[in-house]
Length: 126
Image (cartoon, rainbow, N blue to C red; front, top):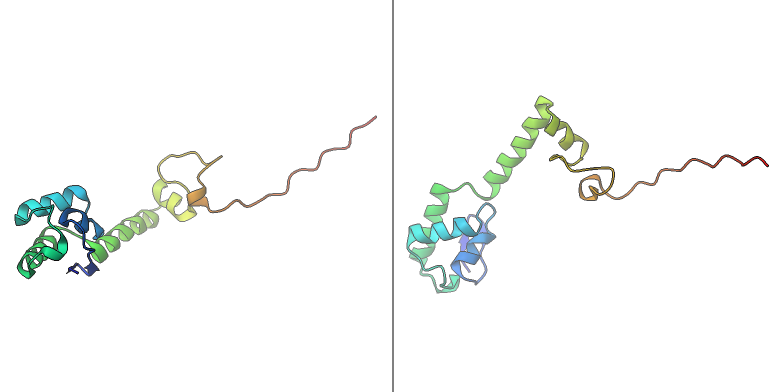
């Protein structure tokens, strides 16, 4: 089992296995395979240690992945909240940030429903 960027990669095709690293998707994985000259259809357990080291070198030099990418993303959100812009306020309140409606739906951001007691009906006069 190959270990790159602190992630144990499963025994799958190289192109697919690289996507288990946070920050590397299918296009990035294909580009990495092109740069290193490794066949993307080879299985990860078939790679020689030199090939794994070459993958590791390219990823460390050209891509921001895993912990540093997660840190960068959280700092970007924190910056928005600190300057008090609209997007930052939406993050702070736990509401959708990109203009979705909130009257209905938005349950993923707002959490489960909180029931509010309804108004009592006025008695009808006869």
